[in-house]
Image 1: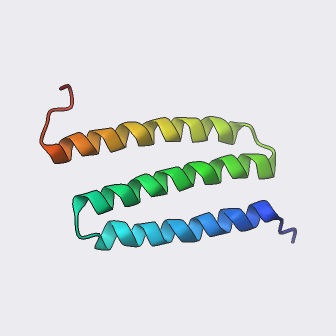
Image 2 (image 1 turned 180 degrees about the vertical axis):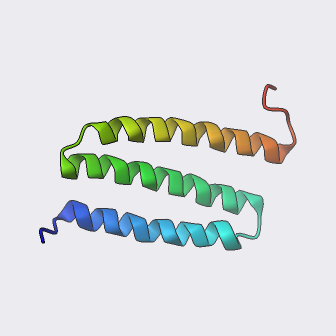
Length: 89
């Protein structure tokens, strides 16, 4: 089994994502939960990019780009919802 540095980085990002899930579940405020969600979105995007480099698959970069865009839009939508505004304002 070939374990290189990129595999170790992916594993560490996964562990850090689990810590962020704890922040989402336990977080005392909505802002803590939103920061945890944003952190997970960023880490999953980084994992996809590293996996694309590690496995020599360019399609993972396209998936990571779409995931990052949808993650950004969802964070904005959740933030506006928590503030009580309509999404089109």
